[in-house]
Length: 172
Image 1 (cartoon, rainbow, N blue to C red):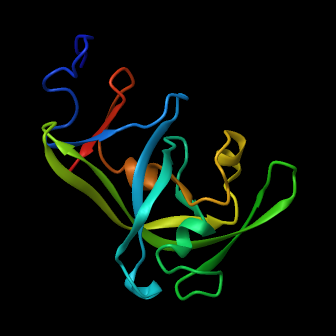
Image 2 (cartoon, one colour):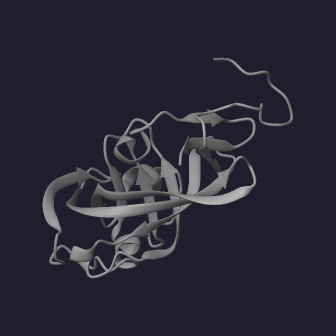
């Protein structure tokens, strides 16, 4: 469906009862602030502090750097429930070791534009690496916690994006 363009988000835009999530930045990325959650296997499923996160609708799985994983109790490749997953190439063509683990994500937003809500995605497969080459390429500080949310997390349901209004809408 098409909605009229204007200064306000059109009434009825996006899925019903959607969580409206504010997009950050002006560099053309779908950037949000999210909180990763560990799992019981990792020792705690409590959410960590906010993490700078990009939504990548072309990525099959989600990923985060070890700095973000450590915030939720996943400290190393030897942590419980962490498995070796292979290697990525870094920006210089060198090899980066990649692990995988199940993590959760909380994405804060609003329902109907006013009621605070959080989209909680539990037990999503995350790739873990010291650096995320995609985010490194666009200037993210790889010493700081950061993550990429892929289709496994965001794409399980219909979503809408309003670039003009800097909003992502996903079902609650």
